[in-house]
Amino acid sequence: MRPRLPRPHVPLAVQLAVLLRQLGELWPQEFVARAVEQRMLGDAVDRFKAKLAGCLGVEVARLHLDHDPALENRAKVFDGDGRIVGYVPAANDPVYLIYRVGGFRGSDHDIKTRVRGERGQFADNVLAKRERKRLRKASSWRPARRWPKRPFPQRVNPWRRPTP
Figure 1 (cartoon, rainbow, N blue to C red):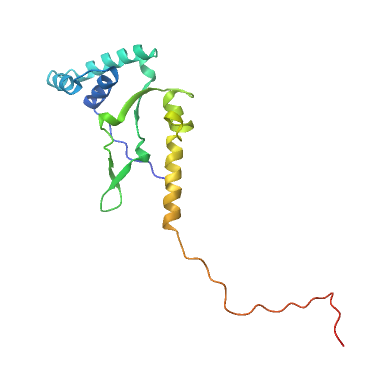
Figure 2: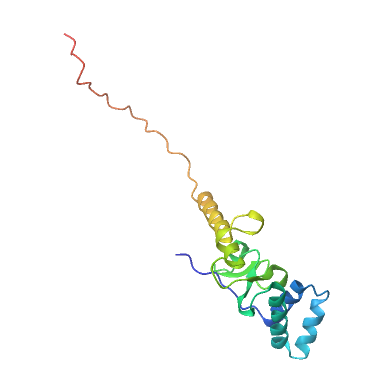
């Protein structure tokens, strides 16, 4: 089994920036900076999450934060010991995060992750599996085996009559 990828915690400021971007706010960075100054991040996230849920016509509990592209499909940054320490683009970059409807089978988040991607592309887990297979094939390439140089033994045909 593959080890799980490190999934860093998404800070409230990033969540708020994603919500504001999805709701169409023109200057989300200024709003986030003001909310940080006033120490109102949690309240602002709850308020705008409720507003987004109302726009989508779902309950607030069904909104899930989704990485797009998925973390398993991003380029990884390794340290000297071979452990993953980051992603390109960064895991918590608000431009590459989106709130989707989730929480049960057949939801937008579940469909994108397991069934099919957006606009008819492969699902996230299928893209990751294909990349792993491609890398495994590329790393295990060996030259073709050569035939042995000795002659093959001659077989005696039991149905042939011996010549006198």
